Amino acid sequence: MKQAASTVFVVRPARFGFNAETAESNNFQQVPTNLSAADAEARAVAEFGALVETLRSRGVQVRVFDDTPAPAKPDAVFPNNWLSLHADGRAVLYPMCAPNRRPERRPDIVAALGQEFGIAEVLDLSGAEAEGRFLEGTGSIIFDHEHRRAYAGRSPRTEPGLLADACAQLGYQPVSFPVRR
Image 1 (cartoon, rainbow, N blue to C red):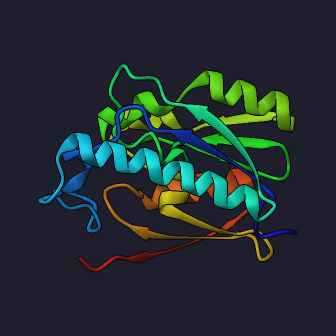
Image 2 (cartoon, helix red, strand yellow):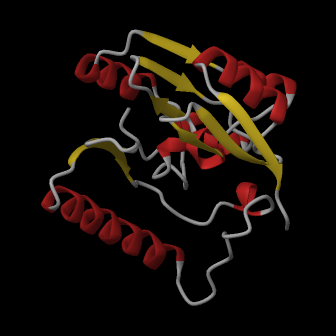
């Protein structure tokens, strides 16, 4: 089984920026001190264009979706947190920790990808949000398709019980570990 896809989908940012709701649980996220919000957004749009161009120049097929300007979704460029597509025709919708990230889940994107890639089943885990349980897709999970293992660091965004449930449904063995902060 292949570990990497030949086609990726990306979401062009419409309102990219610092997300205060996610900063507390993301060690990599820091308040930008040398950029205005407008400059940060412009830089993100330019970097997005360069990414798409680079991937395509290397033979990767890239399917681009445009983010919607409202509601503001500063992290919409990270769709891997709310959706993963699997070789067996299944798609998984994941529960997001930050309420302002939940509108990133877009049925129109799932439908378009379903038509293009033949999604046979959607496994919707997003209802776990109501229980305060989260599992943020491949932002939380590393899927080893060859060995059928799913690696994940425990965090507010990665609940081990939900990881085990998802893995049972997908046929993967969960491997979770503590994350140092």
